[in-house]
Image: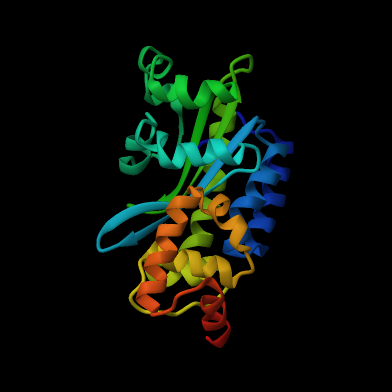
Length: 255
């Protein structure tokens, strides 16, 4: 990879980030990256997610953001994810780092329902994506945004993200050589919850509970409505032959 726009100071900061990537557990890798990346690439908003595989299907999950309001993030997951003009490219392309304006013409991007319904209410205009992937196995996505009055992401920004993508991929590959599959969810949560017969989403909920996330915070953590969360709990209770949240807590403690 030829890096024509990166300065000596950039390389020194990249080396610092490289050490952080090496020392940070996979669970905390994306939040760390989002925090530390601002020393190299400026942005106003960010969005990250993991990618898992189940029965040959690829599914994005655990959407998180440090600067997008929770309600707006939930709106993305439950409604606008199907309108996001970059999703098709991120899922199918082998290009790990891309500027959204290079992928989707402004004539389509700026007049899309996604731009008017989700981007503009946050004041967002420019976007860049980094997919942590190699050999068609995807692990996570990182998206950075800038507001309309700011410049689009530069070639230098793309070069920096390209270098970081390579280092992040190696970290994920070491933890999950075959990609993130159902049994890996316990590793991502930081705790082990081994109960057969549950869906990935149901196991994810239990892993969060086992990791100390409170019941009242689960819908925000999962970016789903309280009604959707209640449906998941009803299915969990039925499969585990229990009737209350307190019984679920006791079962997790026993395991």
